[in-house]
Length: 349
Image (cartoon, rainbow, N blue to C red; front, side, top):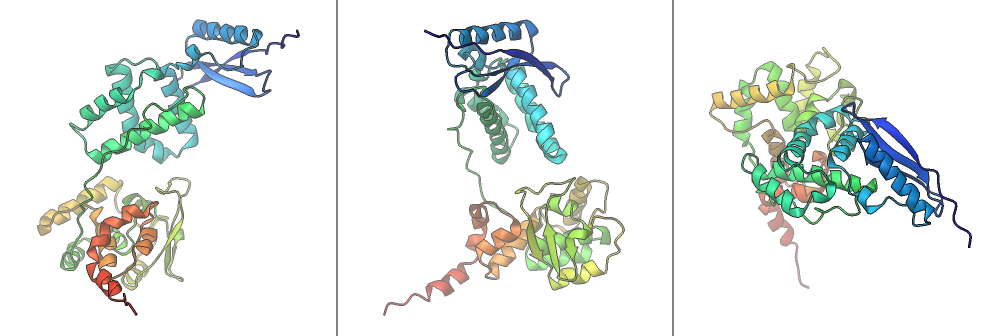
């Protein structure tokens, strides 16, 4: 009986975001002739031991995969590798946005729970994190953190570190879909009282419904005053939430305002050094007027008034850039008159 010739297993290293060397094995499976690369930790002696285990397994002619002991991946090792992957594959804006939640994951799993292996992450542990997290955060914020956890573990499955995502069955919490929008009279008050540096931002948000980050990164090159269309898209310093390009017609009132502006920079609306200043100044304006709300409510105002004017939900969904029309359906109750007009078309002949 001819024994299968064992594959040559190499032990290699890579640098992670923390500067700590990470070891991985690299070989070709003699049965499938496919290249196999698996992380084997930060400790060189343990990595060499695991390399020997793989060599012995291949020598015996067993399936050329990492032993189960290897698949119980070190959580710290995987976490560093995942962050390194995010830095290399995602935009800087996206990395910064998720940084706080990544640190929450590090603090809870590595420091508080002292979890060493990915296999120690169970639905029960995640539910403990949920209870702790909701004491100081909203349900929406928790759903975002849960999404990051699932993405991390799905990546672990893709990399062959674990076999299945242990928390794939955990569903996000149901959210209260209430929202606030400004009435027509309130919109008039806000525009009349806003200083010029703030008024441009308010006008654009009211007449386009774009997100705050999209406003902050809107360039003049994406505003066509000839065709009267604003194009919302990603560029080198910014990625849209859905990563899709969408076009929004410029209303008559917004057109009159935009053509009156001087193009002092490449960006249409950066009246302050940071977007947070824009948000704070808008809230201060509302307080001065005796109103309540946030800058994001201007997006709700755009969608709400379109709905009340009879614009179909699918159209509003496209204008808002929603990836799922279910998100846009929160505005549907604002058009009962439209529903009545449509249902009156029902005739039995």
